[in-house]
Image (cartoon, each protein chain N blue to C red):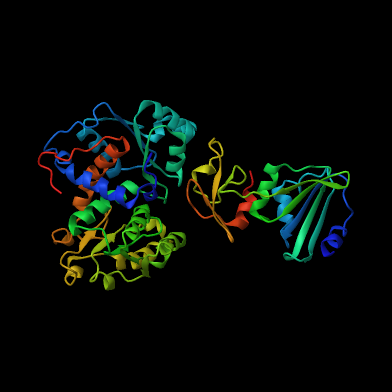
Length: 314
Length: 158
């Protein structure tokens, strides 16, 4: 394995083994112990699009492991604005760093960068394409709560068309035999080619516009933000988006161990009343971005995570 | 016999290239793919919708005084993957060639997805479309992984 561009770059065994590393690294991610596994290594953060959580969690992951980070900085003031090709930018950063984390507005940019680079590329989102490091932290969060990734019933809700997190996640869940219920407005349905891919892999996939009618049987409800600008007018948005919101009263009859996830930022698709229920996992999920990315950085840099990290827990 | 008759619908050529077994109606796309439509310096004969034992009906293209290269001919895989090609010299078949689709179509066409990284034509890496199935022909961009619309693709020749 060179970089991580899509979830197809990882086997199920790779996924589980990286998630085991992530579990062992928890005390390091929390700052309870310092473990400089990546001392002397430099991560290049190339974010051609705004990012808060992904960029910061990569930076935190690298620093918690004793490594260093260089940033592209604001695209508006970098050589990109002068018309530099992605190929040339990668040639430069490739020479400065040991590994690159990248987000780019164009789909396929991460694969392109990997073809141009010597060092591994971690795809932090390419257009509406893939976001595999988010998928790894999502899987880690599910594994933490359910103890398994196998055969779960998962509702993916909201904007399934443009939301790259749900594209990568759905591929991964299907490989572990999960049942998928895709709840979205007609306009924001999962792209046909992705559904075809999932079904080719033998997936049990149901498409519906009804979120609340499907949450009682679910093990995981994964919410995403519906953006106003996807709709022709505000009335249409208000009418449609209203059906993809969760309130504490909606989760009264769900399974006790059901978890609610969200890649954040949320706007109003999860009411704050849900935060104090036993089902809310989105803040742990955001924290897990650090530990999942620590495990990925170690794996791609061929650094073994020790089995006995003091204070570690599975 | 039928094939011989079809060949003679237009005059035998002295030197050049004959592309036979083009699916009926696809010969105009073949001309476009080979950039022949824009090249007015060579005589071109086109035979459309003639009977074929193998295919039911087919098109044939004859290009005079020009020997198409294997690289040019491999482009045909996009519209006529089973076509057979003969290089003619002094009225006789000097060489027979076949179209090789291979596993990837490289630097022939540009991905049809408007937000693919390869839309910036200044990016120097090759345009690569992976062949995911040959019958029916389906292609996906190596970079963005989007399935390609074959009708649209023909307009994206490099």
